[in-house]
Image (cartoon, rainbow, N blue to C red):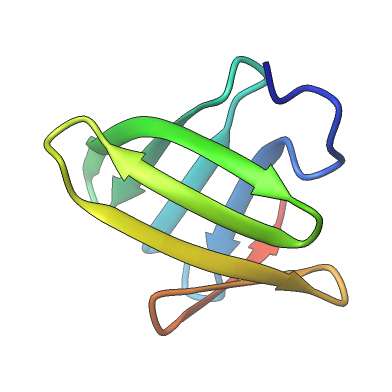
Length: 79
């Protein structure tokens, strides 16, 4: 369970095209444009660092800096 961190919730790019929802059960759902469930998987947060493991085997990571999520060349803001 990842509910102990403060990053649970919805994170969105400035243009709204990419949306990451970090769920309390350690899972995430990523929407891209009109594809509401483009990617899904699990995640873990350690301090301000996040690791993603997509259900298809893809991995990625990111960092929370000053309330902003920097992930794979994208910048996401909390909604």
